Amino acid sequence: MTNTSQSDPTPPPAPSLDVDPKNHKPAAGLAVAALITGLVAFFVGLVPFLGFLLGGGAVVLGVLALRKNQSKPLAIAGLALGGIATLTSFLTTLLLVVGLVATPSASESSSLNVAPTPSATPTSPSLEEAEPEEPEEPAEPEAPQLTVSESNAVRSGNSYLDYSGFSRSGLIGQLEYEGYSTGDATFAVDYIAPDWNKEAAESAESYLAYSSFSRQGLIDQLIYEGFSQAEAEYGVTAAGY
Image (tube, rainbow, N blue to C red; front, side, top):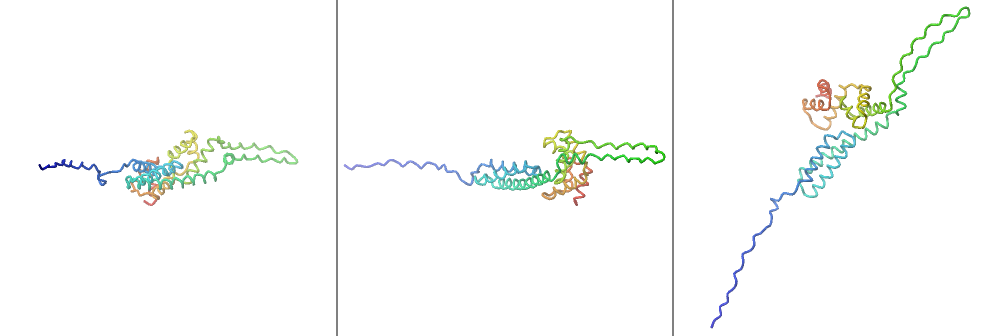
């Protein structure tokens, strides 16, 4: 008798579950965050301290995104914008510190505001007959002395104007951001009374130094900063546009 051996059929191989790496898109959360933070930092780069902090955050997020192989264009864009904002804010912060150190103290500035009182000329009587005394001329009114908060607001306003161009409303807003009341900030700006056309020209030159603008785009940007239409047009023309 012959024994016939039967073998079990071999099961088919299981389908592969491998994911095609070409179709796999890495997460882009850090890269997007770096880009958004870099954009915000870029537009507020002229603000002391704030642009420096945001720019540094954008740089850190961009580096982390590149390390995690996330979207390279977004990460590099955020990294570049953050670097520019950090450098710009560092320079403005340095100029602000130098300006505050170079400005006179409150006691010195208040003493400069006091107008000298003219002294009355004494009359010399003659030996034979005393001449009638001439009436004394009324003394000129003294310039009003500033309060401590007003004097400090004036000093801060001059410091900001030393390193950047501001509109009237922009300078008032910056002083309010520093903690001065609206009354002190408005008083300081009106007390300084700078040439706003000159400030518009300085602001236009600052924008052209780090970015490209059309003439109308630069006028619109100056108007957004608080300059009037005439001041913005004067500033753009003075900047050579």
